[in-house]
Image (cartoon, rainbow, N blue to C red; front, side):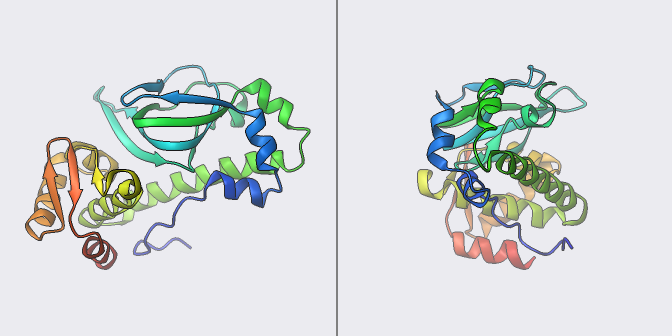
Length: 228
């Protein structure tokens, strides 16, 4: 059972999923095509025909959707070990449900439909693909439940805490996102997110800059996000 006060668990790395499925990682890598993206480059747009599945090897990407008002709103940030573009695995077609943009330099391993079909002869590949889709479904469900049941102030701090951890290895705890991005990820208004973030800044937890948020005390931030 999902509990609102339980902190989110890390998403499983695609390598872990392949190992659990009994799929040889070397064979998986051999079937993939390696792709590189620069900072700000769009990997695909919302509404594009569903294409390759991406295994995120290096870097971070922002996932954005179009709101009812016609604006682009960020709903998640993915890091190395995550996957995106699973629509190909669900029905073999359709349209992209979101836009994905590189945050900094990004490297992915991609599986298009032809390569995916060729993989089906390998032991464990079907189980691996099912686990990839299952992991994404679990994460989507968690986000929906958190948006419904977790208070706004806790969602903001949880979001910043998770992002600080994800960017700590590559950016030293500097989150290259705006307060508006944090607001949309937390599912609250920008004014509410600004107030929460400035409260955290007054308490010495973060430093708000132009287009970035620097975490000054990650341990205190984690404790605050866990006990609200």
